[in-house]
Amino acid sequence: MTTIMAKSANTTSPTATSTTHVPASGIWAWIENILNKIPLPRWAIYILFAVAVFLILLIIICCCCCCCKRKKKVKEKEKIKLESVKNSVTTSLVQPDVEGLQKSQENEYRGRLQYSLEYSFPKEEITISVKQAASLKAMDSGGTSDPYVIVYLTNDTRKKNETKVYRKTLNPSFNETFTFKLLQSEITETEVVMQVFDFNRFSKHEVIGEVRLAVRDINLKDVIEEWKELQAAGDSDYEKLGEICFSLKYIPVSSKLVVVILEGRKLKKMDNDGFSDPYVKVQLALNKKKWKRKKTKVKKNTLNPYFNEEFTFDVTLEQIKNVDLIISVWDHDKVNKNEQIGKIFLGCRASGNALRHWSDMLAHPRRPIAQWHNLQAAEEVDKTLALKSHLKLPIPGR
Ligand SMILES: [Ca+2]
Ligand SMILES: [Ca+2]
Ligand SMILES: [Ca+2]
Image (cartoon, rainbow, N blue to C red; front, side):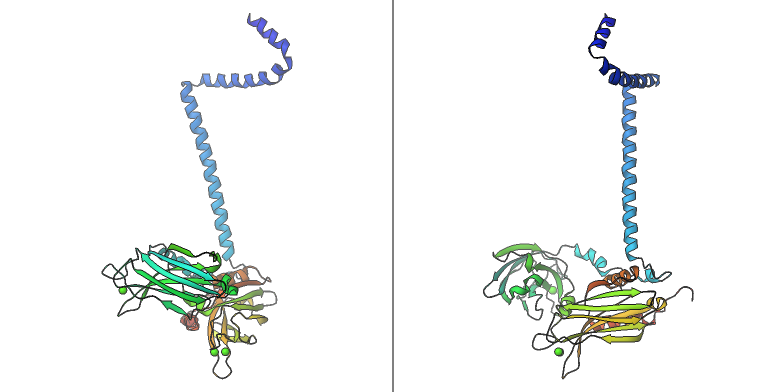
């Protein structure tokens, strides 16, 4: 009976059986054979097989993850590596970024603020109403705060408005409205800042937190009313002083350091007409002593000057390790003494953004690298430079 059936099957589709079924059944028979030799019940073999497959997959996934992480780390290291300055002591002097230190403070809960915003296109004015705050952080020993709000726009930080102080409360109702001039041309660059402070009669008022809104992100056609969580207050000194953009290029073969002062923006207003007359000084200090100095032309009556002036200094590879590049922005005054707006220094002992720019320049010789920097208070930078002036860099091989 079976032989007849097999024969008929063979005659109906001879090719199919000979090409596909025979080898497959051969493999299965071989597997069957092996499984039969294992002195375990069939279900146990299946479970062991599944566990083995799972473990192998797990190992493969782990290996992939490790490889990816290692690649990422190597990339990050390469970014800061100073390729052209070998055996330099820079890495030991790299200070943690200020941003990193502030991170833990940023996460803390500070409370919420309710406000409304309305922009008038014909008048080019923005009206900001500070409504109320809720669940503010307690700043005083009694578990309360004495909150008030300072409101300003970053296009003119000289005009700041503040609400009344509300004593001993964490849920104050302010309901005060302020109007600021905001030209349509200034919208893209301007932020609304609402900083909640704790009033103290005998000590410095402390900032509880702030809400900062980029005006360009707000739908100005409607009246906005909303609640926002307070964030850690940023360093408002930066926006007061302005920013400077310059490019750096180092050519080790010819020992040239090329600094191109490109432009400044949002510089602080230093004159009564609401403008400044900015120019930029580029100084080099070697081994903490003043060494070389050049300056740009004066740009009259502007807070957003465009310079595009190039300065070349002779600095050997040995000297570049000990050089501080100091960029300072000044307001030229005809009658009075010129006023310093702000400054910044770069070099192997700088930190944060400044160190990153310097490192990028050294890591990519002969290539100009441009970057924006926030200006810092001149006294602060001078203090940092002077503080370290006694520091002897242990240069290897000397
Ligand atoms: Ca207080
Ligand atoms: Ca002035
Ligand atoms: Ca001036």
